[in-house]
Length: 316
Image (cartoon, rainbow, N blue to C red; front, side, top):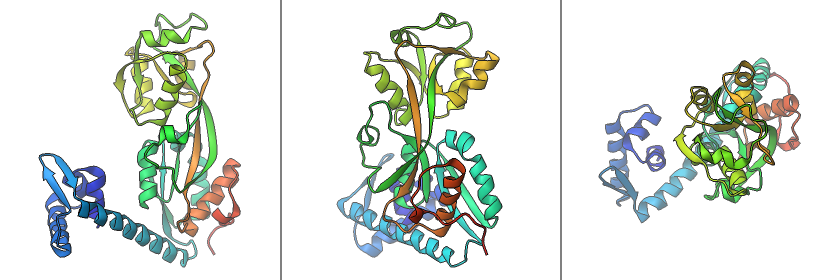
């Protein structure tokens, strides 16, 4: 069942095998046995494309439920160990792992040294899919902002049955390479951003959607020449002279101070990105996860209901 879900999510036998640390033939054999046992064709392979049949989609739906139930069982059994040992699977965007959560990780390890924290760093949409599938216990990702609704950012319903709690907000800053024609000119018109090559996040990125919405409201479209997942990589490419970009302030502040990039002031344009804690609604939440949430609530001063938190204390 786990192999089937991985095949559906990744679209590749090789990727499914890699996710479970087995060989590609092992996945193929197990899925062939599953089809024989169930007596139906679950998927078809045409070239590099894998298409699930109606029977396959039905089995896939149940497989996801089974995996989620297994995760809940393991979390509940872990609770019986009184937080002396266990595992927390946390998904975060890179900014949260670098700027928001390090102190929380340190405090949590101090209180619960026997609990292992598994950290997955990615963009918000893949993390939400991991949360919905039960692979991740908690997620810290980007939220809607600047006139965008949740439906605009996550049209696939990824936020359905997910509770969201604001954690952090940061300003988005336009940057240029040193010596660029726009640098050192004071406040510029927003339209100027559309006249030069622009380095952006991938299309599914929440931050990209925030930027594009803010500019579209002013009738501006960007000349995107490169799309990259990493904000650090984008910052370095701007510093190398390959284009403009708009990035979170924390990412670029030191580069601006050192002169490796230049900040732009844009008339009538202020953008920010908000980060939020995302918790699955209605799913059993382990004491390990609730202990981590208690540390987050204390360390970041965020508002979380008591039902989601174990009081901040070490294991007995």
